[in-house]
Length: 237
Image (cartoon, rainbow, N blue to C red; front, side, top):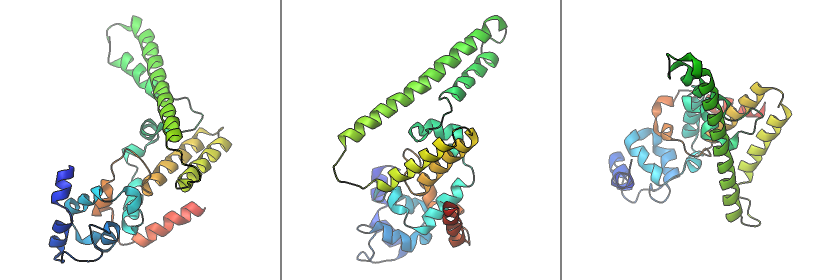
């Protein structure tokens, strides 16, 4: 949805839909999170989506219903959160020992064997190995560039004695410690990484991903509070 669309479906339209006066409090203009917390179940998705321009995923995390929708969505094993997809989308979060680019390289090798030069097996093997090597190196190079850019941005944005991202940094540090301790077990590494990605999504900290699930009531249940309690119980275990 474009910014102009968001404006046309902004606070006046929302208030009008609910039959509320323009001076209603909490205001969808000046206090959108509080407004959402009170009225999220009364608005259709197309109006709720207009709040994308006035709130961030992190800000909306304080709303239990939204947090629970994200939780239930992640437990449905959506494709973006599979290990291969997640590692490709957020390589900076992956600190495991598994070699980068291996799976991508294997896909290139399979394509060379089955989808290219099918009638000439003489050169397919060599071609597959060559493409695989190229793909592994491309993926490794992509991650190196992203890490350099992140380091550069961190240096430029460094503000002494500011501690706004402490929770996020501690979360990533705990994950890295777990991955380091269990480095001999690839499955533990993968599970820890997948859990980190899911947690960051639930708390609105995962970049470059669609948060439209926030407005989709198909993820609501009659036991939202139970789902929330289970999530925090799991964190404490």
